[in-house]
Amino acid sequence: MADYFVGNKEYFPGIGAVAYEGPKSGNPLAFKYYDPEKMVGPKKMKDHLRFAAAYWHSFCADGADPFGAATHPHPWITDAKSPMEAAEHKMDAAFEFFTKLGVEFYAFHDRDMAPEGNSPGESEKNLRVLVDKAKGLQKETGVKLLWGTANLFTHPRFMNGAATNPEFGAVALAAHQVKAAIDATIALDGQGYTFWGGREGYMSLLNTDMRREKEHLARFLIMARDYARKQGFKGAFYIEPKPMEPTKHQYDYDVETVAGFLRFYGLDKDFRMNIEANHAELAGHDFAHELETAVDLGLFGSVDANRGDPRNGWDTDQFPLSYYEAALAMRAVLRAGGFTTGGLNFDAKIRRNSVDPKDLFEGHIGGMDAFAAGLEAAWRMAQDGAFDNFIRQRYASFDSGDGAAFENGGLTLEALAALGAGSYGSAGFASGRQEHLENRLNQYLLGL
Ligand code: XUL
Ligand code: CO
Image (cartoon, rainbow, N blue to C red; front, top):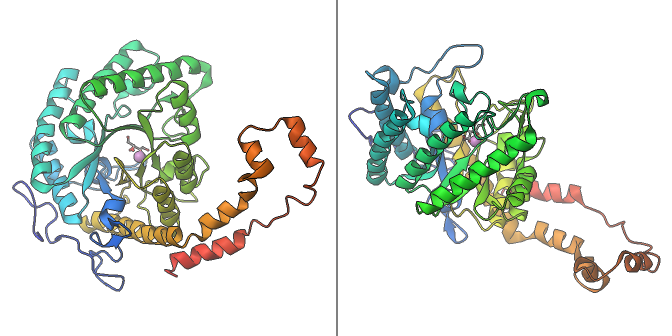
């Protein structure tokens, strides 16, 4: 399907289906490591990785930043006579891209797909029209919806938040949007529905009742969950933690914070985490830390794959490139038993000065190659077992005897203290062997 495109116009002419050509290929529009049909253990690479493209960055973002106007004049917008026609053309371009790149999934916000109307009802109608078109294109191309979401942060009415807005009316407007976005997700057979609290946080404690805002957020999520389940939605709900930006403090700060919130409000059965690498970094955590924490808590769901710039303190949303980080991420994903409803969604954008249509392909190709190489390294780690064995051995004193009694609640502090006064005088001096393990990690990355 080298010249495949949908609709009447080819938006990426001269670019065919991206194929695997191997590590030595000099073709910038070929995969060097991502070989979709290759078996890694029991599953094909593509089924381990479940790649998705993000509608917002790839087809809506226009290169504008706080210091300058748009630099990406998208043909699907410039050639259209109305916002609805632009939305239709944008969708043709999006499905052409998904198909040529070979991603099996996509993710979208309501407002990425359909323009805001003059009333809530008109906005919902616009979305319905585009959802019908998307349904047809999904059928035609086989591309599936990883998750849907509502954009509750761009419109000025949400400047004080959406579910946490101090004005009830704004909360109701947010509910209208979320209900329609849930309907759209169900209609498109979405495997998940994401909540990213774009402005669910505060700019100043001087004007904020935090306790009330968080209760409102929980109430809103409970209502959304109940509505979606009533409509027959079987997929996962995701919360996407982020500590700050655009607000000074976002309530969904990081995985631990969100886990406490979900459990407190009894939402931990339905909600999982959608973990974004750049958000982890903003929270002062390694990407792998957030993933491993979610796996430990039984709350792992999906991934927004990207990277930040270690020298910048904001969400640069660059394409992921580090095999090192991808390997540690995939190690956590494998430990979780792999993705079920989730996948690797490229919440990443090309740079403001990346104005060649090929740039969008090459950004994704690099990210897919990085995760393919990371998957293989993580698989080698799991098969070889050096890390798992070391960790198991490190805690072996809790597997039997007094250690097991401690873990099982069979000791009082007095009994534990009495043991401490006895025969454990030499404990505590085993090497953590970090250097050895780090060197081993490099060997796995080099394919050894
Ligand atoms: C913003 C962000 C969002 C969510 C979806 O930082 O990551 O694009 O992924 O709303
Ligand atoms: Co994201």
